[in-house]
Image (cartoon, rainbow, N blue to C red; front, side, top):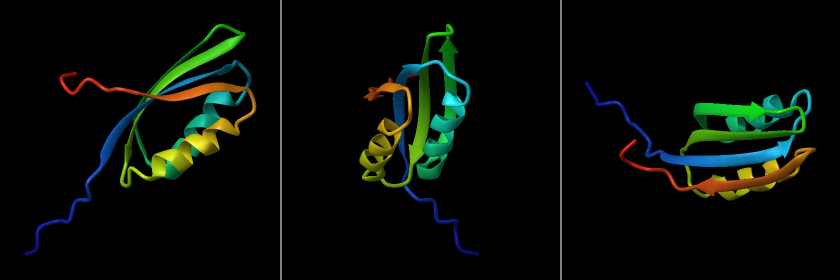
Length: 89
């Protein structure tokens, strides 16, 4: 029996900041899921702004730049940035 082939994944954390609106988080997570696997997601909104953190697994690190460009096209998105993850958490 052959062992299962497991691709190498890169764990990446993103911080998202945008204006709070109906469908904002859904649009962000839909775009992210097109590029990788969402490991965790946490968003908070106060009626004006929405801030969230997503941990995602990407099978190709090069896809991160394409994902960031696509996310920046979302209506109401103010900032998206890669956040350094703590490997001990």
